[in-house]
Image (cartoon, helix red, strand yellow):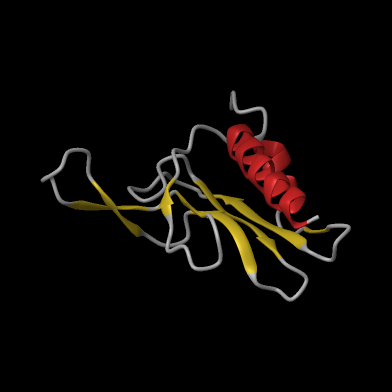
Length: 120
């Protein structure tokens, strides 16, 4: 049994599009993998995005593709990470530390709320 209180909620949101008052919208995609993988050790494949009313992505949290992230330390090189977020339309992605489905939802909606408030 999972101790992640948000997992069922996240999986229930799969395929949902949540309309916002200003015409923007949020899309949630989430599924549980049969087995953990190197790319997805927590078994949750996800893509949570906020789009403006024209469809441009304003924010995204996902693990659908790898991004390059610098390893800790100045001369240690690069590594590929899958859990990441896109903070604005042109952002190639920065690492996101996945802790739980509950925390993912909390982090995503907190950042989406900030963006929506600045648009008002």
